[in-house]
Amino acid sequence: MTSVDRFKGIHRAKEIVDMLNIENASHIDIKAIAMQRGVIVTEGPLKGADGRLAVFKNKSLITIRESILEKTKKRFVMAHELGHYELHRSEAFSKSCTESDFYKWSIGNPMEVEANYFASELLMPEDLFNKITEGKDISRSLIEKLSREFNTSWTATGLPPAIVPV
Ligand SMILES: [Zn+2]
Image (cartoon, rainbow, N blue to C red):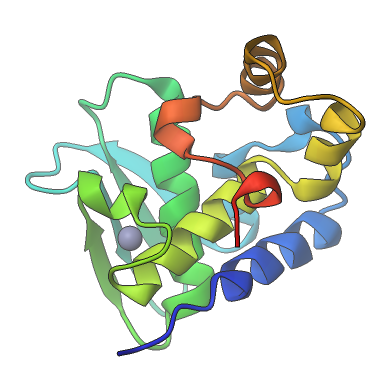
């Protein structure tokens, strides 16, 4: 069985957050970050997938299923596909991801797990997350505040690495 290295995704996302000097949640514009990394994000009528990455020599392309309703879910799918680009582009030139791939946090295809941890860390960087949660108990109102601050949906994004049990 291939072991899953969730830190691989987290570390890569942290490098990007540092590299781009992201210091508050409003700086986390996934489309703009992808563009800076050489990836264009577009929306289209994908069949049987929520997100797709196609790696090309000069510019790579992420396509998001246009019929996804929740903006927060689209952001997560974008960040997940960017994770495949950052982590797996030398192994996989194209990747199509289905709904169930976005819920893989421990078991399943290691590439999917790694892309999810990457996405989670990029959308909710641990340092920024800790600034808000420091010394506070995780409560419903705190979770709502975090969702608003980071523009994420708790159910669509899963839990950030900071509070996922090892
Ligand atoms: Zn995937």
